[in-house]
Image (cartoon, helix red, strand yellow):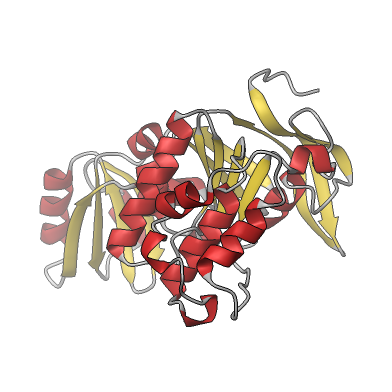
Length: 302
């Protein structure tokens, strides 16, 4: 049984195969109220299957999945959840107002439609037909459909795909406000800036398992102080022996060097390779922290 009494959704020792492929292998995780939990990892790590189990679209082969203490497939559990999937269509001929009103009618105590439209930034688009919306505007409608029932759990799959910068920032604000009001939020995203900005917890998946469960700040701390990227003929063995270097890995034609002291490393690097090119130095980011947790052949898909 799940021993996290604050969890409103949980997987405990779950395994799942899709055809001949073992997708999840003894996976356990908990989603708690009032937190934004980002589920990150490379393609094929098992993120989509995990979301499918938590939302009741899939059933585990072994282990248990619970949502509000019930089987996630139970309507009583699913009615308390809002889901914004990456791939979902809208009826072209209906207006934004009509679609949100229709969806709201499925819930016993929905938000007022005007409030839902305001939260999603759609008030000025209420009379527009969905078929005329841009990609970013359509994503805001899908967000409205996910929140109109006052969900206790909000599942967001790549929520800001196709949105411009201003729309992304506005949606981030509403997501943080929802978490502060007690909503549990599960976020899956390839946008690590988004995960870093929103998440209280980051779950990093690889090969069907959780390889890290920590705050973004703590994960960044694992990566060290700075990341150097450059073109060099020096071997990884030589690079690893430079002062203060913690990790070395290839990124396309570049070398990625994680160091605790960028000044010392760069001085030694320049002395060792006079032909050094395309040198870039940056503070360690969440992307760098996740890269240190993944096997080298899977880092670029994260």
